Length: 187
Image (cartoon, rainbow, N blue to C red; front, top):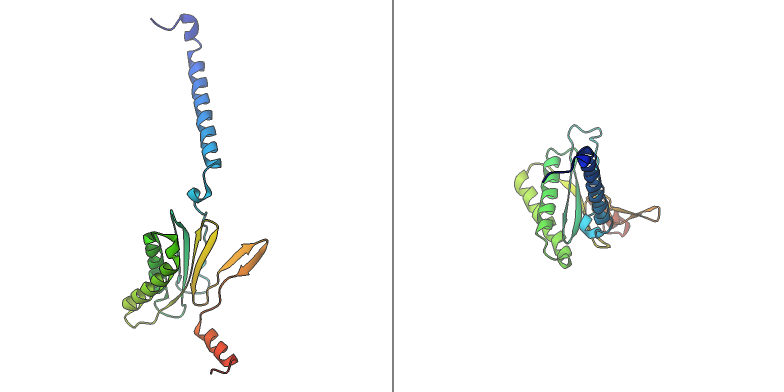
């Protein structure tokens, strides 16, 4: 039993119409799913950009990662003028990301920052073997509606809220420490 002759001439139109309806249903379903997906399932959008400036080598390194516990972004600025700033910044960021991916509970976030900093320092010293090199580092973790952060050196963490930038951290540079001691009569 075949298709009646009067419907055969309409068959290509019916197939195209059916395909168009199927595509529209799929697009609608996708939009619906994205509109109602929980924000933590979508992650935090991360953007980046960098410029080498007047340096001969790009000493900065950055990375980000998302787990069920949150999203992290880590930026390290290799100390310019030292031969191995890029190596130091790469090691530091790599260690922070690696340790973040091991994090099994957001309540351990402070231990994560401490452990990652110690391991980074150890691995940098081991790789450099006394050669000059170093890096600053800032790391942030967004978990739900909270920001956790760590900073070493003079790199800055700022939060943009209500149209204003809010400076979150203090510089941890030797020059800053010496100035603070001098101001209180320590040096």
